Length: 382
Image 1 (cartoon, helix red, strand yellow):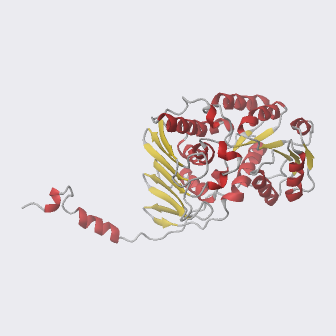
Image 2 (image 1 turned 60 degrees about the vertical axis):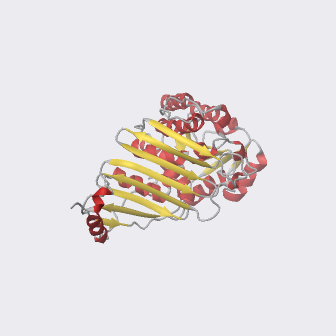
Image 3 (image 1 turned 90 degrees about the vertical axis):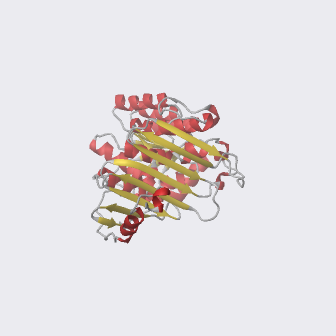
């Protein structure tokens, strides 16, 4: 007489095997030392000019002050705003209200350009033409062809152009990425990230006018994370978006994306209208182990590496703010010092933007989109 469980689709012995596996204790092991922290230059860092003093500039300046960088000039077309930032962070910095005044100085080597995306490309071009290294705020460009042209220009002028994808130096994401690079989980199979938080702070700000805010401005961090793991291997992206019933801000605050890979998969979930019980979680699987991170927000995360050797839980140091902004600038300064392309270079960032653009358009078309076929964002998103 056959076991009744066979009629329910469960093989004989499956329950016993599951119980046996669950009863096995995975031993704890020491976490490996990985280079996930912001890098340090060997020589004195070059002088920096900050261009644009919007809200995010405070995080840039606070991180640079903590790192001991030399911000010599703060530039904003409304001079009083630049003076306010100077008073808060770098009282010895000069204040100017025109990019030309920055480029006329021969003592400033690096420009950190934080103005809005629509204004950014011409400023980056002018800085590169003047032979200056540039750190561009994200998203780098709104047109992939423009981005490629700027990357070509940087190469032609012999300078470095990097993108402030500061999420790369969030301690939990940085540790996971370095563990993957070190081969600790074998060949990659998947990456899944979900973020549940309250994004209603955008009401009555300029962000409230960005139709595809969650995928374009916030989600770009996680598209970049996927690209930092898998490169430009993605073959399609399918994304959706929706308004939450309780939200008061204009852009849809719910979005998700499925990323198809030749030998793997990735998924991203963004719930931007969760007022209570926020959570952030990431899971990366490989043929030889897995990595997971979970916490109540992006600043407090507990990372676990599980392999055949056991389970390791590193004691992470730092937070996304300010390590993300310090890390982005430090990586550029080290690349300048070593004469190499930075890991967050503009050309490589085009793979991240290709995923982002494909997701935005997919959420409108309601069909999968091949990354790279969408060369620029819809006008409604700019």
